[in-house]
Image (cartoon, rainbow, N blue to C red):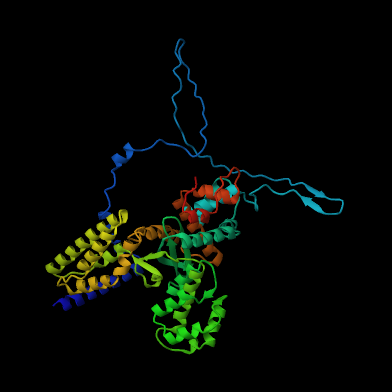
Length: 508
């Protein structure tokens, strides 16, 4: 009977998906978004109400200099002056200024021409303030190019759509390089990184955007693949070499590459290869490309060499990779998200009252265990670690009588080391909410402006979204950051962001 219920549930799911597809093709409204289980919210302290927030509201302090202006009033004769009553008003001045620089030009006695240089920050026919405003509105304000063009023209800027596009994509190698440096600093110094990916469209094709980050930095990379090869390539942070070392050989052993193939690689004197072509040529000479076995020796060996490259550059040497159990992220020291693990139990189809009761009981146990893990992170100890490990076994080895649930619990128990990584590394989070929050800005950008067409457009979008998110985490205003990089008059000096990430300090 239970088997029939399972088949009926599968058919219902198939019918639901077909209905959703028909609805999408007809342009009708689809099914509503299902809210998450709320497991993490249930273990968090309740947020203050709106009334409570208003009671603790701080004094308004503008980030700019406050100008005092005395307002006079006509009073009757004999009145006594009792001082001034302050009333703070913040305003915004948006105006367009066009400057024609009359550059002196001299001819020296030896025939050379000397031309007076332009002021600092002036590059091209659009000033640094305008460029800062454009980058701020497009990348952090999530505006579209046509709307931004209309806004600029409405305030008096004479600019074409093509010129605006160039402001967004040209001469930004410095920003792209800084985003790469931020990733390298994060991979070198962070105790953990949280990762996630989402769909992306580039050059008319479907692709994927991968997010890597933690509490101090965020980095986005858009590629056409979401495989482990792609993820390991991103972890090299721009380096192109392939390296054979202990980390590479250990990875190959863990992935089931035959010992004979590993020995063949170890006997060769070459251990470092400049690029993919050199690496594949090496594998071809060793006969790897001619093998037709499972697992694919070329793929496994390439993944190992990529991991060896990342380790040789001191990336993720002792760090933990936290993911939602997507297979491509399972590299190095890997930890799993508890929210995604509990969601499997939450979404399980139950057909009888007994099954539903068992599901509810197990979820309650998981929630209680999750709360205990959060308490452990605040005050870790060896005694509590042993007790929590034993408690994990009792929860996930139990037999509920609900066969599908028992199989799921056994599957989760097989991931014990990854789910309980927090016992050895209390500083890592229990969930990937940080990654999902970070990648939301990319999803918004995708909904607003669809995909990118050129490689430089893709790289600029990834870089500026990465830098904006990193600035937010470091407590740096994106407006000040762009002003510092574009040399706006009176700008505040902002050091390279990787400097703050390496020191894990926020600017004073």
